[in-house]
Length: 640
Ligand code: CA
Image (tube, rainbow, N blue to C red; front, side, top):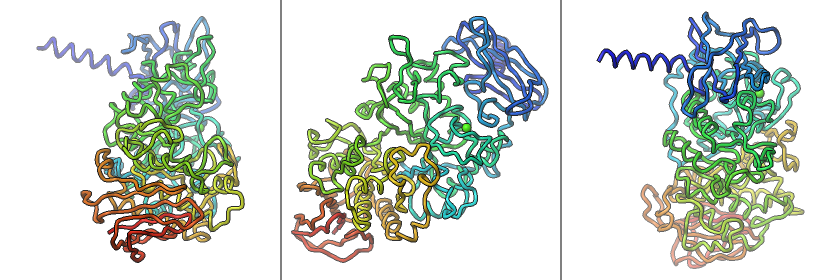
């Protein structure tokens, strides 16, 4: 027994002295342990300690020692440095083929100096805001989620926002911001990349440089540009947590946009510094594959990258209490890795992604996390470009319109979206724009949307694709589009600012456009009060009625029945007796045409709750079957 205890103790000591890949730095007031993995051919690993995040000479240089291998067979290197190193900065430098490759912050830094070039030694317990121990994720089932995609700078930067912490994480802790989100009725904020990215110089924030942030530098650290002091490693961590805490208190989940599919560049990346070429896919001719469209693509199929992704998302959940992840270009990642990520995270963590890539990948296409393969990834959702483009027109041509312009031929794609991309006997998949068959097992595997940060926002798209559109028409069609989205059985998603009729001055790709293009103009709330009013009532209608988010494929198949389509008109009936649903039969008609239309329904008297761009759950009057009229360019919803 004693021998066994001693053996176990020895194993424990070994584990403690060798930080896992995900934790390169393990701090105590008495000593700090540094570690990394490398390729087998690494000859030496040098640790340099600094007083500052940039500049100055190392105060100490230490050689890490090789100590065993990790589970994938990579050598592990580590060193214990005595003394209290809190507040110090460090770099790692690996020697291959007789020369050191250069300093970097390591594979998995959890705190960094300004611009993320050096790691930082931080006592993470000190970054926790008061009450963080009690912070809890709101309990919201996947079928009940309403996603709001936002960029920190867009949301708060304009003076009209009335927010103090402009462009910062802390803006979302302010009562005005929370009140706006609550009044709108969303319950999950999906934040554009908020990990440390490369394109904004954190030491020159006064330049007001803008970027979406799809250029990852350090995956496990918040972006410094959104903190009040990027030079203080604790600032970004603590303020990020304060933001999460404030949103959680308001009953709002926090979802991170994660971009593991590529790095800002190859040579400057931590991956390449520590383990050359191990994290990137290559073509047969030896060149780097570029499925991300950003110059490289990571190799999720390799154990080293797969483990990296798993450890990283788990870390965000554990340290920052994150509630979900949106995978950028999920089609670059392999299906096995996405399923491993799903299995590694608790069930309440919502996972979805872009089911496509931005170029061909150096990996078998049928093994990638594409939209068409979502049925092979239970518990993971994908964006439906089917319903998006059926409403507004194709991504490839901003001038081409679709259903919203009254054009026929898009009805089956919209029906597929309404059913949540599951198999439904009344959808004719041969007439769907992109998909040839259903791809979701459950409706919660489909993200329903009409616009996001990519491409034109909805207002610009309507203006671009419908020449001569009047403001009245613009508003009618905007509201019609969102009615299709928010009454869909998929998980609804909206771009921040659509509720205030945002535009981006016609800019198609605003990834680095100035604030004048990307900012939300909050004065629009007063200019177009009917827009926010409709959005909030539409979201409330969905939230209050189980019929619009059944969350179960069989129930959708049993209860949702389409009426005959007409050109640019889709109508459906949700049959009575759905558990938790107070209304009996519900009818939804979406009329994209400029004409008043008629639809046949069973004889009877119905209460109207949405008509001619007005919503009132208590009723807007009654109508009588068997023939009801639907005003032009709008939705009609009624029940008995
Ligand atoms: Ca940065």
